[in-house]
Image (cartoon, rainbow, N blue to C red; front, side, top):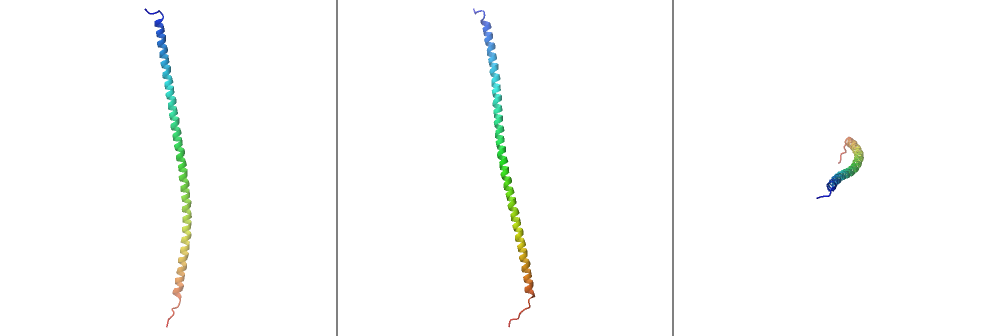
Length: 109
């Protein structure tokens, strides 16, 4: 035969185990939640780093585009000057031809 308080002790032990199990479940859920938050924060930081890298690349590309635009403007300016010189030379060449055409013919004996 069991002592008179034995059943009550077993019930208390069972209740204590249930409470401990419930507390362990709550702590596990809280830990999982914190872990998920950590993973989310880590993913956010990774995305932030990638965004920063992309912004830097875009700035570098923009600087190169601006530099290429400046070089193109300089080249266009140089081409315009060369075209002006060629037109002037062509005009002078035409004037010289006109003068040569107007010279009297010289007979060689």
